[in-house]
Image (cartoon, rainbow, N blue to C red):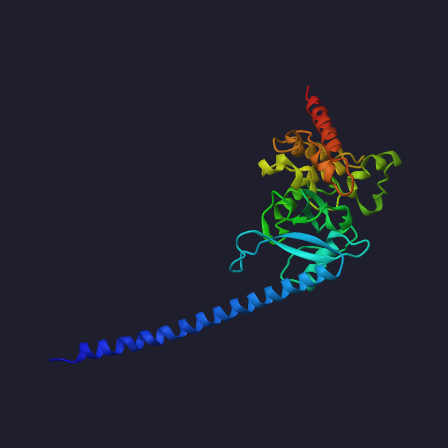
Length: 297
Protein backbone atom coordinates (compact mmCIF):
# COMPACT_ATOMS: atom_id res chain seq x y z
CA UNK A 1 0.00 0.00 0.00
CA UNK A 2 1.30 3.40 -0.93
CA UNK A 3 2.11 5.81 1.90
CA UNK A 4 1.75 8.94 -0.27
CA UNK A 5 -1.75 9.88 0.97
CA UNK A 6 -0.56 9.51 4.54
CA UNK A 7 2.40 11.82 3.85
CA UNK A 8 0.04 14.38 2.36
CA UNK A 9 -2.13 14.19 5.44
CA UNK A 10 0.80 14.70 7.77
CA UNK A 11 2.17 17.60 5.71
CA UNK A 12 -1.13 19.49 5.49
CA UNK A 13 -1.33 20.59 9.14
CA UNK A 14 2.23 21.92 8.91
CA UNK A 15 1.30 24.05 5.90
CA UNK A 16 -1.77 25.35 7.70
CA UNK A 17 0.35 26.18 10.70
CA UNK A 18 2.77 28.14 8.50
CA UNK A 19 -0.15 30.09 7.00
CA UNK A 20 -1.75 30.69 10.38
CA UNK A 21 1.42 32.05 11.95
CA UNK A 22 1.66 35.29 9.93
CA UNK A 23 -2.09 35.81 10.33
CA UNK A 24 -1.63 35.57 14.09
CA UNK A 25 1.20 38.11 13.93
CA UNK A 26 -1.01 40.43 11.90
CA UNK A 27 -3.77 40.16 14.49
CA UNK A 28 -1.30 40.90 17.25
CA UNK A 29 -0.10 44.01 15.45
CA UNK A 30 -3.68 45.18 14.96
CA UNK A 31 -4.47 44.62 18.62
CA UNK A 32 -1.34 46.50 19.63
CA UNK A 33 -2.26 49.39 17.33
CA UNK A 34 -5.79 49.53 18.76
CA UNK A 35 -4.38 49.53 22.28
CA UNK A 36 -1.99 52.35 21.38
CA UNK A 37 -4.81 54.45 19.91
CA UNK A 38 -6.99 53.81 22.95
CA UNK A 39 -4.15 54.93 25.20
CA UNK A 40 -3.67 58.09 23.13
CA UNK A 41 -7.39 58.87 23.33
CA UNK A 42 -7.32 58.36 27.09
CA UNK A 43 -4.37 60.75 27.44
CA UNK A 44 -6.12 63.30 25.23
CA UNK A 45 -9.31 63.10 27.31
CA UNK A 46 -7.30 63.50 30.48
CA UNK A 47 -5.55 66.55 29.07
CA UNK A 48 -8.85 68.07 27.95
CA UNK A 49 -10.41 67.53 31.36
CA UNK A 50 -7.40 69.07 33.08
CA UNK A 51 -7.57 72.15 30.85
CA UNK A 52 -11.32 72.44 31.39
CA UNK A 53 -10.81 72.48 35.17
CA UNK A 54 -7.90 74.92 35.25
CA UNK A 55 -8.86 77.61 32.71
CA UNK A 56 -11.78 79.38 31.09
CA UNK A 57 -12.56 77.24 28.09
CA UNK A 58 -14.92 77.03 25.16
CA UNK A 59 -16.60 73.78 24.27
CA UNK A 60 -16.26 72.81 20.60
CA UNK A 61 -18.28 70.00 19.08
CA UNK A 62 -16.52 69.19 15.81
CA UNK A 63 -17.71 67.02 12.94
CA UNK A 64 -15.33 64.14 12.24
CA UNK A 65 -15.14 61.79 9.27
CA UNK A 66 -12.27 59.88 7.71
CA UNK A 67 -13.16 57.12 5.22
CA UNK A 68 -9.57 55.86 5.18
CA UNK A 69 -9.37 55.00 8.89
CA UNK A 70 -11.12 52.07 10.58
CA UNK A 71 -13.77 53.27 12.99
CA UNK A 72 -14.00 56.77 11.49
CA UNK A 73 -15.84 55.94 8.28
CA UNK A 74 -19.16 56.86 9.88
CA UNK A 75 -19.59 60.56 10.73
CA UNK A 76 -19.49 61.49 14.40
CA UNK A 77 -18.79 64.50 16.61
CA UNK A 78 -15.71 65.02 18.75
CA UNK A 79 -15.61 67.33 21.77
CA UNK A 80 -12.76 69.72 22.57
CA UNK A 81 -12.40 72.16 25.45
CA UNK A 82 -10.17 74.98 24.26
CA UNK A 83 -8.63 77.63 26.56
CA UNK A 84 -10.11 81.00 25.68
CA UNK A 85 -8.09 84.14 24.99
CA UNK A 86 -9.43 87.59 24.19
CA UNK A 87 -10.13 87.98 20.47
CA UNK A 88 -10.06 84.26 19.77
CA UNK A 89 -11.82 83.17 16.58
CA UNK A 90 -13.33 79.82 15.68
CA UNK A 91 -10.33 79.18 13.45
CA UNK A 92 -7.96 79.94 16.35
CA UNK A 93 -9.83 77.40 18.46
CA UNK A 94 -9.66 74.74 15.74
CA UNK A 95 -5.93 75.30 15.32
CA UNK A 96 -5.45 74.94 19.08
CA UNK A 97 -7.47 71.71 19.15
CA UNK A 98 -5.44 70.29 16.28
CA UNK A 99 -2.06 71.33 17.69
CA UNK A 100 -2.69 70.29 21.31
CA UNK A 101 -5.27 67.49 21.22
CA UNK A 102 -5.60 65.72 17.89
CA UNK A 103 -3.19 66.29 14.97
CA UNK A 104 -5.48 64.30 12.68
CA UNK A 105 -8.17 67.01 12.86
CA UNK A 106 -8.37 68.29 9.29
CA UNK A 107 -9.63 71.62 7.95
CA UNK A 108 -8.60 74.26 5.42
CA UNK A 109 -7.18 77.66 6.28
CA UNK A 110 -4.60 80.02 4.88
CA UNK A 111 -4.46 83.80 5.28
CA UNK A 112 -6.55 84.13 8.49
CA UNK A 113 -7.56 87.58 7.19
CA UNK A 114 -10.93 86.79 5.56
CA UNK A 115 -9.36 87.11 2.12
CA UNK A 116 -8.57 83.58 0.91
CA UNK A 117 -12.03 82.15 1.62
CA UNK A 118 -10.65 78.70 2.40
CA UNK A 119 -12.04 78.33 5.94
CA UNK A 120 -15.78 78.66 5.26
CA UNK A 121 -17.66 76.20 7.49
CA UNK A 122 -21.07 75.59 9.03
CA UNK A 123 -20.88 77.00 12.56
CA UNK A 124 -23.89 76.76 14.87
CA UNK A 125 -26.16 76.26 11.89
CA UNK A 126 -24.83 79.07 9.70
CA UNK A 127 -22.28 79.34 6.91
CA UNK A 128 -19.43 81.59 7.99
CA UNK A 129 -15.71 82.25 7.72
CA UNK A 130 -14.10 80.79 10.82
CA UNK A 131 -11.27 83.32 10.80
CA UNK A 132 -13.64 86.27 11.26
CA UNK A 133 -16.13 84.65 13.64
CA UNK A 134 -15.45 85.57 17.27
CA UNK A 135 -15.71 82.65 19.66
CA UNK A 136 -17.28 84.67 22.48
CA UNK A 137 -20.21 85.64 20.25
CA UNK A 138 -21.36 82.03 19.90
CA UNK A 139 -23.47 79.81 22.13
CA UNK A 140 -21.84 76.69 23.55
CA UNK A 141 -21.22 74.05 22.56
CA UNK A 142 -19.91 75.60 19.36
CA UNK A 143 -20.98 73.12 16.70
CA UNK A 144 -18.60 73.11 13.72
CA UNK A 145 -19.45 71.20 10.55
CA UNK A 146 -18.34 71.17 6.91
CA UNK A 147 -20.32 73.22 4.39
CA UNK A 148 -23.65 71.50 3.63
CA UNK A 149 -24.64 70.28 0.17
CA UNK A 150 -21.06 69.39 -0.71
CA UNK A 151 -19.19 66.11 -0.60
CA UNK A 152 -17.06 65.74 2.51
CA UNK A 153 -13.49 64.61 1.89
CA UNK A 154 -12.35 64.42 5.52
CA UNK A 155 -13.52 66.08 8.74
CA UNK A 156 -14.24 69.72 7.83
CA UNK A 157 -12.82 69.59 4.30
CA UNK A 158 -15.24 69.49 1.36
CA UNK A 159 -14.66 68.83 -2.32
CA UNK A 160 -14.67 72.20 -4.12
CA UNK A 161 -14.29 70.87 -7.66
CA UNK A 162 -17.97 71.27 -8.60
CA UNK A 163 -18.00 74.83 -7.25
CA UNK A 164 -14.96 75.74 -9.35
CA UNK A 165 -16.53 74.11 -12.42
CA UNK A 166 -19.60 76.33 -12.03
CA UNK A 167 -17.40 79.40 -11.73
CA UNK A 168 -15.52 78.43 -14.87
CA UNK A 169 -18.79 77.87 -16.75
CA UNK A 170 -19.54 81.61 -16.79
CA UNK A 171 -16.13 82.39 -18.33
CA UNK A 172 -15.09 84.87 -15.60
CA UNK A 173 -12.69 87.00 -17.61
CA UNK A 174 -12.67 89.67 -20.30
CA UNK A 175 -12.82 88.40 -23.87
CA UNK A 176 -11.73 90.37 -26.91
CA UNK A 177 -13.46 89.95 -30.27
CA UNK A 178 -10.64 91.50 -32.24
CA UNK A 179 -7.14 92.07 -30.93
CA UNK A 180 -5.79 95.36 -32.32
CA UNK A 181 -2.26 95.83 -33.50
CA UNK A 182 0.26 96.92 -30.90
CA UNK A 183 0.46 100.45 -32.26
CA UNK A 184 -3.33 100.76 -32.07
CA UNK A 185 -3.68 99.61 -28.47
CA UNK A 186 -5.45 102.05 -26.20
CA UNK A 187 -6.25 102.13 -22.52
CA UNK A 188 -9.72 100.76 -21.81
CA UNK A 189 -11.04 103.32 -19.40
CA UNK A 190 -13.94 102.77 -17.06
CA UNK A 191 -16.16 105.51 -15.73
CA UNK A 192 -16.33 106.13 -12.01
CA UNK A 193 -20.07 105.45 -12.05
CA UNK A 194 -19.64 102.07 -13.71
CA UNK A 195 -16.87 101.14 -11.30
CA UNK A 196 -19.18 101.91 -8.38
CA UNK A 197 -21.90 99.79 -9.95
CA UNK A 198 -19.82 96.61 -10.12
CA UNK A 199 -17.56 97.26 -7.12
CA UNK A 200 -19.36 94.97 -4.68
CA UNK A 201 -19.38 92.08 -7.14
CA UNK A 202 -15.58 92.14 -7.28
CA UNK A 203 -15.28 91.37 -3.56
CA UNK A 204 -16.09 87.67 -3.97
CA UNK A 205 -13.42 85.42 -2.40
CA UNK A 206 -14.76 82.10 -3.74
CA UNK A 207 -15.52 80.72 -0.28
CA UNK A 208 -18.69 78.88 -1.47
CA UNK A 209 -20.71 79.91 1.59
CA UNK A 210 -23.47 81.26 -0.67
CA UNK A 211 -23.58 78.10 -2.78
CA UNK A 212 -23.82 75.99 0.36
CA UNK A 213 -26.74 78.05 1.70
CA UNK A 214 -28.73 77.92 -1.55
CA UNK A 215 -31.66 75.51 -1.51
CA UNK A 216 -31.86 75.58 -5.30
CA UNK A 217 -28.22 74.54 -5.65
CA UNK A 218 -28.87 71.73 -3.18
CA UNK A 219 -31.59 70.30 -5.42
CA UNK A 220 -30.21 71.20 -8.85
CA UNK A 221 -26.61 70.16 -9.35
CA UNK A 222 -26.47 72.02 -12.67
CA UNK A 223 -27.60 75.37 -11.28
CA UNK A 224 -24.80 77.89 -11.73
CA UNK A 225 -25.26 79.18 -8.21
CA UNK A 226 -25.01 82.68 -6.73
CA UNK A 227 -21.21 82.91 -6.73
CA UNK A 228 -20.84 82.08 -10.42
CA UNK A 229 -23.74 84.35 -11.40
CA UNK A 230 -22.24 87.17 -9.35
CA UNK A 231 -18.93 86.68 -11.13
CA UNK A 232 -20.75 86.86 -14.48
CA UNK A 233 -22.47 90.04 -13.28
CA UNK A 234 -19.08 91.63 -12.67
CA UNK A 235 -18.26 91.32 -16.40
CA UNK A 236 -21.71 91.61 -17.97
CA UNK A 237 -22.26 94.97 -16.25
CA UNK A 238 -18.81 96.28 -17.07
CA UNK A 239 -19.16 98.95 -19.75
CA UNK A 240 -15.87 97.84 -21.30
CA UNK A 241 -17.25 94.45 -22.32
CA UNK A 242 -18.08 94.28 -26.01
CA UNK A 243 -21.69 93.74 -27.07
CA UNK A 244 -21.08 90.39 -28.76
CA UNK A 245 -19.34 89.02 -25.68
CA UNK A 246 -22.09 90.30 -23.40
CA UNK A 247 -24.72 88.68 -25.60
CA UNK A 248 -22.91 85.35 -25.35
CA UNK A 249 -22.56 85.72 -21.59
CA UNK A 250 -26.25 86.54 -21.18
CA UNK A 251 -27.18 83.45 -23.20
CA UNK A 252 -25.26 81.33 -20.71
CA UNK A 253 -26.95 83.05 -17.78
CA UNK A 254 -30.43 82.79 -19.31
CA UNK A 255 -30.13 79.01 -19.59
CA UNK A 256 -32.63 76.90 -17.65
CA UNK A 257 -29.99 76.36 -14.95
CA UNK A 258 -29.02 80.02 -14.84
CA UNK A 259 -30.56 83.12 -13.30
CA UNK A 260 -34.16 81.96 -13.71
CA UNK A 261 -33.65 79.14 -11.20
CA UNK A 262 -33.17 81.67 -8.40
CA UNK A 263 -36.26 81.91 -6.19
CA UNK A 264 -35.17 85.08 -4.39
CA UNK A 265 -34.80 83.54 -0.94
CA UNK A 266 -31.88 85.85 -0.03
CA UNK A 267 -30.09 83.06 1.86
CA UNK A 268 -26.93 83.64 -0.19
CA UNK A 269 -26.96 87.35 0.60
CA UNK A 270 -27.41 86.69 4.31
CA UNK A 271 -24.34 84.45 4.64
CA UNK A 272 -21.94 86.26 2.30
CA UNK A 273 -18.91 87.27 4.42
CA UNK A 274 -18.23 90.20 2.09
CA UNK A 275 -21.79 91.58 2.19
CA UNK A 276 -22.25 91.26 -1.57
CA UNK A 277 -25.91 91.84 -2.56
CA UNK A 278 -25.99 88.57 -4.47
CA UNK A 279 -29.75 88.29 -4.83
CA UNK A 280 -30.01 91.84 -6.17
CA UNK A 281 -27.33 91.09 -8.75
CA UNK A 282 -29.20 87.99 -9.88
CA UNK A 283 -32.44 89.96 -10.24
CA UNK A 284 -30.70 92.65 -12.27
CA UNK A 285 -29.32 90.00 -14.60
CA UNK A 286 -32.85 88.65 -15.04
CA UNK A 287 -33.90 92.09 -16.24
CA UNK A 288 -30.93 92.21 -18.59
CA UNK A 289 -31.87 88.79 -19.96
CA UNK A 290 -35.36 90.07 -20.74
CA UNK A 291 -33.89 93.08 -22.54
CA UNK A 292 -31.66 90.81 -24.61
CA UNK A 293 -34.63 88.66 -25.62
CA UNK A 294 -36.66 91.72 -26.66
CA UNK A 295 -33.99 92.74 -29.16
CA UNK A 296 -35.34 90.14 -31.56
CA UNK A 297 -38.83 91.64 -31.64
